[in-house]
Image (cartoon, rainbow, N blue to C red):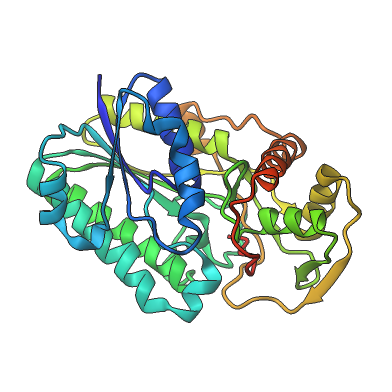
Length: 336
């Protein structure tokens, strides 16, 4: 039974991944620091499905505590593969706090890499972001594009920098690495600050929807179960392909314009949206669009969930949460 260490295990994607890996027969060690970016209660609820599983162990730790602290906490664990999802999230907030994104997304990632080097853990699945492509005009986005001058937010820069560190540790210390660039993941448990979540809650409350720009910006929305399937396939690939260093896109390869997304969320909720027009937000990109041919070739990755079905499942989950409210007050939406 291989053991996977999942950082950010209490988050949106991380909690779904823990459940998937447990179902696939892994032992899972979860790590989270319950960053106050959103309500701790939500993250604890996310973990409920895994906490009592006999093959799940949870540790509360901030990776910024360093490699030595991680070594002490995980002294009794024999880890075969690391899935590094923990990060400081959000394009917009990164514009206001760039130094914090360097500290959490780059320096803390290096601490994790140091722990792997010192303890001999060889396999790393690293969660990067479509934001590294910035306002690249060539679409769809391919993994081999030159990204030296594409990042237009500190969040994007932090993710691309962390990718560079994973290569350095692969080159110097023979870590096996899959970097995966996620494309606007949505679905049950999505963070409250993200666009689909905020739009649905506003509609349910009878409030207008803020639309930034003219509604022509587009995102490659990817349902969480499809992203998690890609991660699970990546974990299995790492365990059977020593010497790996690859970067892949995990998207849906089907961009949706903002105005069409708002209409689709309205249809899923059953409410006609009223728009509140706003200027574009700093750091936002025009489009994200994944070329997923490499992930398909390497992993057999093939997204299965169309937007209407994914939104239906999200709204069903959200209404169940509204019936037992643990949600924080509405915050500004982030779409990347």
